[in-house]
Image (cartoon, rainbow, N blue to C red; front, side):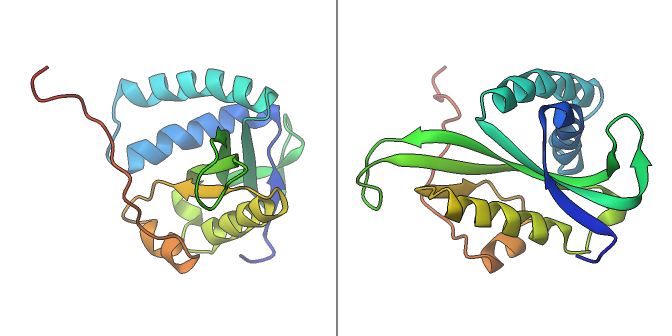
Amino acid sequence: MDSDYSIRQAVIDDAKVIARHRAAMFRDMGDLSGDDVLRLENAAFVHLRQMMAERRYLGWLVEREGEVVASAGHGEVVAGAGIIISQLLPRPGAIEGGAQALIANVYCEPEHRRRGLARALMMAMLDWCKRARMAKVVLHASPDGRPLYESLGFVQTNEMRWQGTKES
């Protein structure tokens, strides 16, 4: 990441840009289109504000230096990512239980991709996870993101997702 960019932690007033990035992420992956993009953005905004207020969602944003966005008083946000925090029951490797960090919403505006921004965001979040002593750190990787996550030490697991029963 070059010196034109900087990373900061998100504040509750950033919920709108985080929601926009979340919807754009699903749109760019081909999972969302049309009116559903705006519907997801609006719904995510409501949830993010609540989760951020409760400190269950922590975000990191990359800003491009130079042009200051007047309403926020910061540079232009061009990338972001976050962590959803939940509690774990005691388990092997975390006998005392602890917290799990689910990394989510890793997104870079198209014109700012391939500049190391996602890697810098991941490093900032993983550093935070180490300091916060997270018992477990997980994420769901898109095909495009998988090489980055693997290079940072993430591995495939045996997680399965329920899609409902075939009889229903």
